[in-house]
Image 1 (spheres, rainbow, N blue to C red):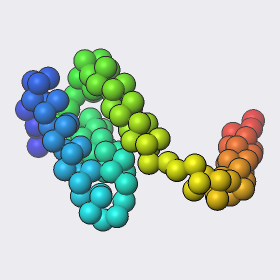
Image 2: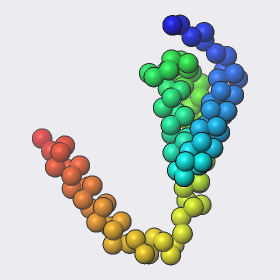
Image 3: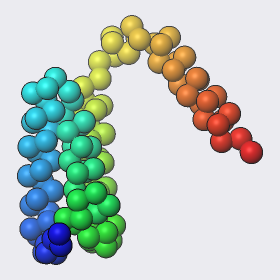
Length: 109
């Protein structure tokens, strides 16, 4: 099924609305809103739904992508608590070390 190409303003509206709704749904399921935002991005990606063209996403919405990443990073950073990070400190260090080592081992040529 061919989907008609959306105008940039309509596509932007679809992105914001879908991100908001999927973020709310994720929150209701006790997941962070960020998980919903990522899910909405995957659902609307050119390779999955075809609703948005690759050219529109990569070229015309480059600034929107940067702003969205900034908002997501701000949302994640705003929800962090120093006391919780201290409590999980050793676990965080070991997870980072093991991920780095596994990445090196599996990509070594």
